[in-house]
Length: 159
Image 1 (cartoon, one colour):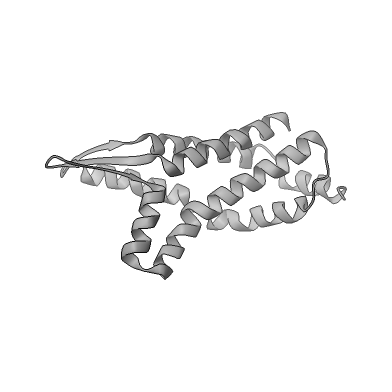
Image 2 (tube, rainbow, N blue to C red; image 1 turned 180 degrees about the vertical axis):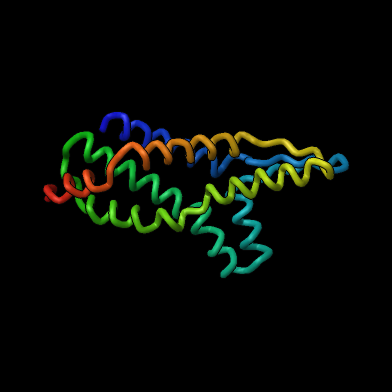
């Protein structure tokens, strides 16, 4: 559990930094634009309305951050053997929102956009793209590195 606790903390840090760092930098006719996930969500809220902004905010930022923070909480409880409150509830919530976390789909869309825009503008991936890719790698390690039934078995014995 030591490794999973460390990987979950590293993944959360990479995700937080990736969300606020520019993931794409465009240069068209002397104008430069850098876009981060936060700026993209804000742009959707200002141009697309509140409903569409909420539909972008939750799968791109809120659910991935809550999922990773919940995994940090659960794996640190497992690592240190302390019965922190609501651990079962948090793990159940993490399992349910996992399918609604769409940051990986967003990254795939960004990569497709980079390829498509390469002929029209100077496009460079930003640090955020690498940070988010690293966070997704950490999440894959977490998902493949533990058996959910083992987590549930341990949490059943917690107060």
